[in-house]
Structures are given as C-alpha cells and as structure tokens.
Length: 161
Image (cartoon, rainbow, N blue to C red; front, side, top):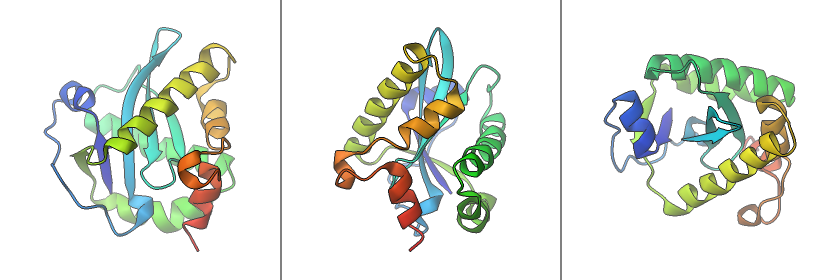
C-alpha cells in the first residue's frame, strides 16, 4: 500500500517519504493523506488516489506513523462497513496492507482535489455539525467533475469490475 502524504504530515511524523513511486497496480492500495482542522480540532483526510473515496480521521491522539496506520485500518473497516463496502475492504485493501510505504504527492491535480475535499469536509463539520463518519459518507456521495459527475462511492465500487 502506498500512502502519499503532504510535507507537513511527513515533518509531523518525522518520516522521509519515498519520491516518485509508481502507483501500486492495485488501485485500492493507493491513498492520499492531508491534515486539516475543523472547529479547532485536528483531522486527517485520507482519500483513495483513484476514486477520491474519503475517510476523515480524528488526529488528536495520532502522534506517530504506527498510530496513524493502526487507526487508518480501523477507520477503513468502520467506514467501508457503514457504506456497505466491507467486501472491498477484506478482498482488496487488507491484502495490500502487509507492506505500507509513505510517498510524496506525485500529481498536483490530486493535491488540488485533496484541498477541495478538506474544504468540503470542514464545511460539513463546522456548518453542518456532522461528525467525521457522517461527513466522510456525505463527501463520498458528492458528484465530482473529474469523474464525469459520478460520485467517489460509485467510482470506488466500479473499480472492482
């Protein structure tokens, strides 16, 4: 599994991410992560690099890469189960989790989309008052121009086909 992280996150975790890694052939094994804040609380937005299927993680207790990865596995299971995608988690994501590598962002359009998603997540949480899980599920149901106005959820499901 490859997790592309921002420089800010790499500095916080005191890791040196690999540069210019090619994507994993398994599209379910490529993820992006970026910190953001909402209502004066720290969060991480984690999104699949192909579908931009998003998860929102509470960052308050996450201080190390190990804690981040453990919470990410728990959060993926929780969110994908709540979204009816637990089969994807167990068949396509869990097997790729035996080797996890942090990498730098390689595509500026992905970084721009992550900024859009963090702004949307912040809006849902601050103005809508939605908790992280509900905000994640709502983000995944918003059509995206980059996907021909399909939702991240639809693209994520179609990646199995």
